[in-house]
Length: 266
Image (cartoon, rainbow, N blue to C red; front, top):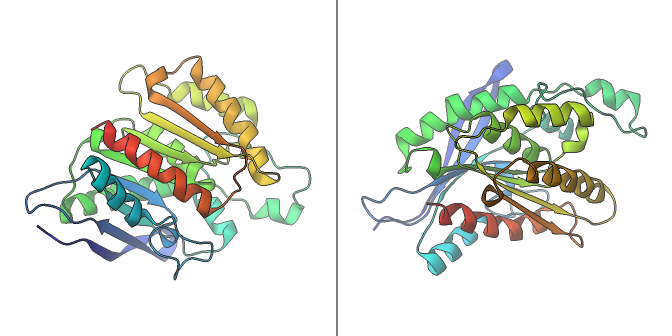
């Protein structure tokens, strides 16, 4: 039996940046391989000490799932080391469509928006995934691979999984910032990505507390209804907790449910 490990890696990122990636491997048998979940905001996944907003406590979620079902997963957390604007840009794909700026958004803030989600997508799929699969006990194949994130990370996980249904079987889409796009553009992109073969499992979650999460909830609910008319019912789960705010504490709770669903598919 091998003990759990939390390994820190460094990767080159576009424009000369360096990116931290942490890989959590739970305790496992000597010859055991495990499914894997790639996640945004790695700085918020494992412990409170390095997070400004609290932790998802993913290690504890994996341990609880192992105890209850006998199954576990490797967690790969991709850090965001930049400013809130830089994070939003890197987790906002440009190809979905025209951005929809809220009326109250200052002109200066609008000028700082420079969507680069495609670069992050390429980094995950073509740099991080091969390195992790080579060096860690990953059970390979789309059915064993998921992507998960919250807020702009939820948007990015939705984009990446639907863009690579041959590589990912599940997406944890928590409090996604779908409202960043013009509605017609977003709907057109989405319908263009829906495939009849190998549709990924989509776990859509939103809180509904007043403020940002309330706006996100409205658009998440609209997206769920749009999908329900053209997507396999057994591949779509929508969870709305209207009392929950836009925060790590809410995503920590729902992550455990997503983890269970993903591992139940294996």
